[in-house]
Image 1 (cartoon, one colour):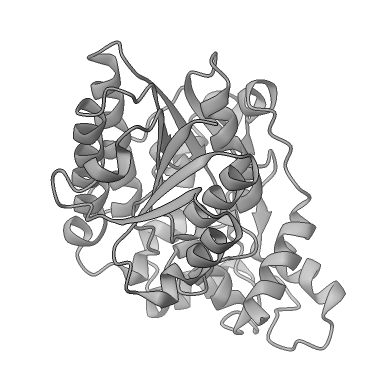
Image 2 (cartoon, rainbow, N blue to C red):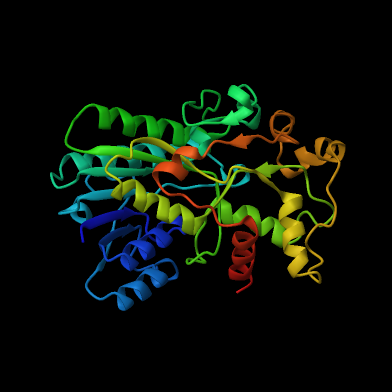
Length: 342
């Protein structure tokens, strides 16, 4: 099978992608920030032992030009997954914490691709946040449905820096792809990624957000926030399909058609773990969230543009062209919760 590169192989999504590629027989190269960090590289080292001679680890720095050149040598496909996903309360400096790693990292990977004549396809891990900035933006879309044709125009470094970072990084990748004819690009735009983590040391915002629910931050009642979701295993398969399907092109929303709220997540988990008192049993009315939200880092602007808002997701291209089959959200949540509990 072809030799492929996965950037960010020690991350939540990257580790699952490496695992699935190995299971399909690929020769896999992957990058990590430090091969000496055994907390993060442990799962990859276990995969390497299970698949001798088919997985190689390389150190690479998103901010260092040429850092990915050695890892990419001889590869036909590059999966650019590496990019920090942090929840707003974890971001202290939007430019430094998320924009620079996303944009400069993407430019450095693109530079590597330009210097690697064997590369024929780039599969770029974006996000639905590159399509909309706030939930209220989707209400302005046709039929109030999230679709690939839209681009986030409302986020900035100061307002929703993660969405802004992924928007400008994806745009830089498309500009580079359209400026040449040797390699093609496909963008995978997932919703909130859930499911069992192979890497407990991951700092993914997906894991942080669900950990707040599991630890009882909302035991008094679930605020009426909903999320577009996708199982990390389904997302990994979508990446591979985007690489293997020669006709795949453009952007693909990889998420379930229906959103899932905090309250629905808690209800699913309580049905299987009724004794876990940390899980909320009721849905919180809107007014306490508006009153108390700022004390928990939520601005009134954010609350107004997200609280109680739901929309449909058009994932038809992913279903039709990538063969996306979303696991039931119940299976995803239970596997996520059980992996978290250990």
